[in-house]
Length: 123
Image 1 (cartoon, rainbow, N blue to C red):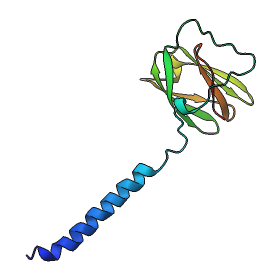
Image 2 (spheres, rainbow, N blue to C red; image 1 turned 90 degrees about the vertical axis):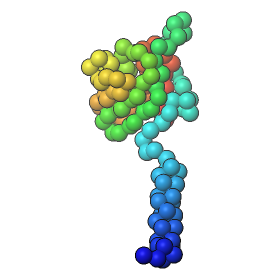
Image 3 (cartoon, helix red, strand yellow; image 1 turned 90 degrees about the horizontal axis):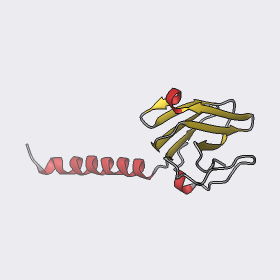
Image 4 (cartoon, rainbow, N blue to C red; image 1 turned 30 degrees about the vertical axis):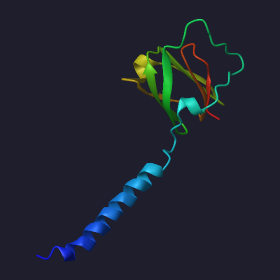
């Protein structure tokens, strides 16, 4: 078979693959928000204890109307999620494992607090 006839299809396929992966790389992840780009604002009535350092950090937050998905680094015992309908307190033992947690909420989440760490504002 003539190798010159196959060069154009090879280049076209390679270019299509490069455009596809470039498109995937440049797309933002929907619903995920890293904790280091969000401003931490305290909710009224809550005080974060600043004496011990936080043992856990929020890496990713996935939001939907009635559920919050979290990816944590470190050890935490409880997750407090604030909504307009009230707050939900969840144990990490019952909510998930291996640093990934799912908590059902009565409405859209507005803020999250892990143990005694500062509150992460989601708005």
